Length: 413
Length: 221
Ligand SMILES: Nc1ncnc2c1ncn2[C@@H]1O[C@H](COP(=O)(O)OP(=O)(O)OP(=O)(O)O)[C@@H](O)[C@H]1O
Ligand SMILES: [Mg+2]
Image (cartoon, rainbow over all chains, first blue to last red; front, top):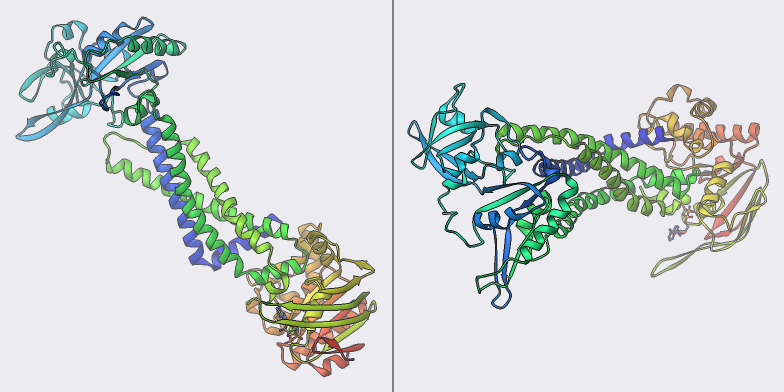
């Protein structure tokens, strides 16, 4: 039976080349976009270089101050003072990495301007995060305390500044007219790892926004809290919430302060969508759901339409099959199977397209150091989506078709 | 074999109401070859469709092989048609996407048969109509007469007791028409298949056992 369905399905697909093309294009295009997008999200969300201990880390990325009386609202990174003072007092944490957002600076190599994104960190940063050192080592707590002009640079920075030479540790690199001694070279971090990305890492004691005198809460820093084990995370969250609740607010424009120690994903979302106590994760999931739904709805409707046309022009076949003993249900089944064959074919093409697009993106180097790969969960989900597609877009037309009166079906030419 | 009692068929559209059949009473014996004639639009096809359970009458009852099918569900009707009835249409109604053999096998798909059995039965039916050398062809590669012979093979492959043919020679020239007619006569004579055939051809009708004439939905002979 299945073999017969397959035969007729392929025959129809080959006869109706234009419809087949449109259907297959719709399905495979949609799938490709979803899969590339998913790979992208996956890369941003799950790539774990250099924060390999993400499962026992909490991220304090942004804080929010609210003044309910005058409607003031302010969200952004913290001051170094705030993090050192409050997050630094967490008793249940093992270590706390504090670092600034990256800042733009520039330097000249052979009279050509080179942009260097520099980032200020504390010494614990290098223990909380697992950068791969290609040579040298991080700067020491002592060097940080002494505000020595030392730097860890990325592999790309090394090549751009020094060219292809074996070792640069101990050499000097100049940025914004200041010379720093290189202590180590690390493997590149993709910019999608926004908290860890940088071309040059410097001791926070060198930062220009004077961290010593800025006793305000807003600044340019965020923290990563490392716990002894994943089991400690809830405890740390609670402790931090308690600390934040007791912070005295000196600025009279504001009366509420929100700062959370979040897991990686929640932290990212909160930074963009957070509002008060609401992290925005719910919004993200709803939004993504609606997006995927709408995105899949279009080709589904398209397919439903094509299927109705495709099936109706086969009314003679339907009439004949019914006359010779096919029940409506059998016919519905046949057309759904045919449609699933079509969508699975589209799925296969979609996978090939995805591979092509990914390799194009990877090779074009649109986004620094990003390397997209097919995610097998996403692949499985996509194939499942294909099946659902096939069902959804096949059921309605098949049902309409099965209600055709035999005599009319045979009359239609 | 087929008993029609007080059959009436009314077609209603928004504006007009057509009485396509008006109190038809007909008894068709097992093994009988009956032909139906009448001017265009007099209700011949309607009557045949009702006999074939493809359409329901507005009034009256049909019993086939002493079974009243009025209360049958879609599924039961499908199974009943599959077992008892074979259809032949004026415009063949072959599935152009399928090869001759697959077309002939079609009724068997809706029965409990293996692929091997289906193949054997379909080949046998094609031999009966003299087309066993064309099984890999597609319908569009055949002449009208050959197509109608494929359609006959499809109608007889399931060994139905009744064959309903609506102008089977209507699209063919007289030589090919005669060929088809001979096959039907042969089928009726050797297998004892009951055949009801609609035709416009007096000469064909004369070869059958009995002739029924319709005029404006009523039986006049
Ligand atoms: N689906 C329908 N809706 C409305 N009227 C119909 C329908 N089918 C048939 N009729 C009408 O019923 C009458 C009988 O039609 P039928 O097709 O049975 O005629 P026929 O005798 O087979 O004609 P022909 O020799 O041309 O095939 C005609 O007047 C036709 O217009
Ligand atoms: Mg007719």
